[in-house]
Image: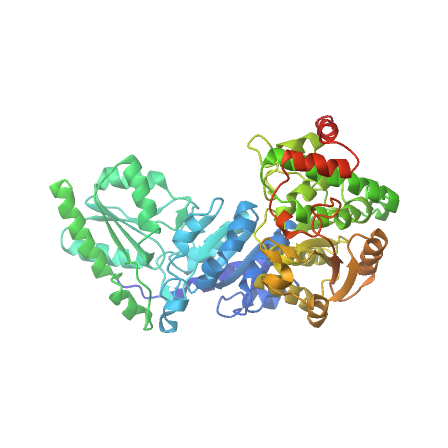
Length: 318
Length: 298
């Protein structure tokens, strides 16, 4: 599938904050010396009195955001996912999640989209980390529009949120009008032979894989699981019941991410064969994002390969 | 945005104790601390006793709050960054009337609401959950900034240990407080020079702490943390400082008030056994049985 228009998910975040700034005087934004990278500079320019550049001090930023929320603010803070989810974990876990504060984390440059920077800056563990924290909600938008809607939604719902954004331009596979329902999977394509459940940039790959499968006479359902926590158990169970085979696809480590979350629901409600497209328990490396996706085996062709395998297993009854 | 009262006289400490009354309250707090710990079977003794005097001054002379309405929008905010001193934190809250004193006897127990480390979801008067060291000052900076955005007259107090000055994140917070010039923020450090493994100066020295805060752009005051005149003067001075946050280094003794605990780091992280508590409470002018009954009846 060819997508002509491309845009950055982080821009969706930045534009949503700008809009929130207009709508709600209680929205405050913090950043760790990455205002343009995280695109919070749109907000900073218009609302300097509610914007705080915290410098290269992510731990402090996390808890300052928490303190602001105690005075009735809706705090958004942003930095690269590698720092927002990993360096900060103790602070996110105890102050924000245990206290259940109204703090929203924008994890920019998630996954391998920060390609040439290499393994240190390629966050591929945030899903696992954030899913494990009580009170935390996790959204992984697939494109600009979804990122914008997810950010606006996070401001509406009380409590801690983590939203993952990428660095690169990614295909616009939704549009302004398409509804975004928090906690509900978005079915982009129906099918009967298997279901591909994907999130983030992998939704576009899943749609492309579905095209390839279709040319081979295989009908694939594609679910965009933008909300990883709370996960849409109904959509997953229905997919297992109606298509009998599932492939998950994520730009994240195999352990603890989307695949793990879906497996848990499938095992509990309607066990069917499953296959996984993810980063297989290894660190990243420098390279162009698209090259890296091939190296890590998370392209549309890899989804196709796993789809054919899972269908074979389904037919064999294993 | 929070509703802010226009009536200035509303913003005052609900007790307004003088020094004699503060000393009497502190004695009750120390008795509470010793009495709640043997039954808990775990918990910290030394730090709570060293923080009792400046804690009492804050709660019964300095801070603005309403114990019957813990989320009163007009309130000052306080953060016990060294979460483990819950025995003094909870005793102060109970003495102030946030909850009955008998609750202290359920400290660290399944059927109580007083967690080992403070939990805002469980305990009235606890603003935020915490206990992992080096986090409270950042939270206080955020609360100070939020109050400033709202032009709220609130003051924000952050109580810290000397040990947590070893946390790198503490210094991120120190730097940011000065950068943002949050003069509505006052830090108090319980400088008892003792931590779990020994004397602070032997484990990981933090001196010259006064000079460090000054170098980071804070107003710093060095006091005897058991001298009420000095404590109240320092708090008053902090209120007058403009354009920078204030830190009060409270030089204290771990285990203050009980002779066999005083200045002994081994009392950092253990509770007294019942017989030790009996001995301590006699020094504090009561008996274990008497004070236990006192707590039950309040």
